[in-house]
Image 1 (cartoon, rainbow, N blue to C red):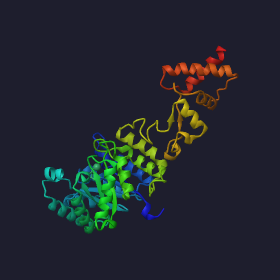
Image 2: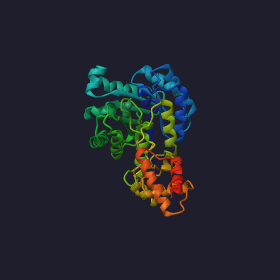
Image 3: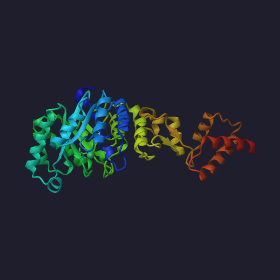
Image 4: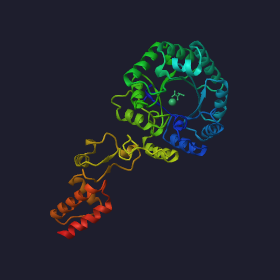
Length: 389
Ligand code: KIV
Ligand code: ZN
């Protein structure tokens, strides 16, 4: 894979993820997650927003000191005090980044910032120049880009790249975009900003309409080469694009995507569990990749297919994302083949076909009364069936 084909994974679990109401983390917890992200080979870890609190400042410092392989990024509004604080927080990083942002949508400029567009443009340029005094890796985000006016966005992006931004990140801050439109926006901006090839193009999608991953992937098809994401899709409101889904979509569909990540996917499930344990945000069972049912099969038809050849109903291997193996769940939809196979694995043999039939009939009766049949249930019903005949 050459350099142009690398998709940079920028994880913001420790910053935007922590902005999930109720998900705040201590310095020690953040460091544990950062080490897990580094082990997973995340390229950039956004460790926090140092101007937000002294706890966040200390946490970013600790991550900058403790992580050596991933770039450590600190967020700052486009203000002198924020940028100065971010710069000090990452000073001991092996590789650091300052990420500064300023809103560019009409609603944010008028109602929140109370600034004219020209003043926003000038402040963005000033902020990037100021950040460059401390660090040669600077990211700029026009907040609420998804609802910004494209001509104005082009002017801001051209100016911040000229001022020294090395990454320009297009956030869909309120999760308003839809994939076709967001992909077209990225293509349009890249085509119209004259110095667009002097920066890495990044996207940061929120999940208010459940489209964060789809929007990010559409942007990748339009040339974005950094995606911002979080473990388990944690983040403000409905969350951010889920790292595990982005990484596995791109990897599983290498026939389609023109790039791949450097992520060690076997670390995905352990890291997901760590984040769930630390934040107390449980992962829904049917969540793609990291949900407990993501590689489980219950229906007889599916179990029979998978037992004959996994690929009949599996497009990824459970082991490749850090699960022990796939799972056959015995329940009322399960068939004879899965029943017999689990019994064999448990060392339960049937002397005659009649005994197997009797045990299977008892299993179906029990399955109508219980959600899931466990190994102990199978042992019990197999001996009852043998005794009955
Ligand atoms: O959602 C957003 O716009 C952000 C920016 C700070 C990038 O989180
Ligand atoms: Zn965000």
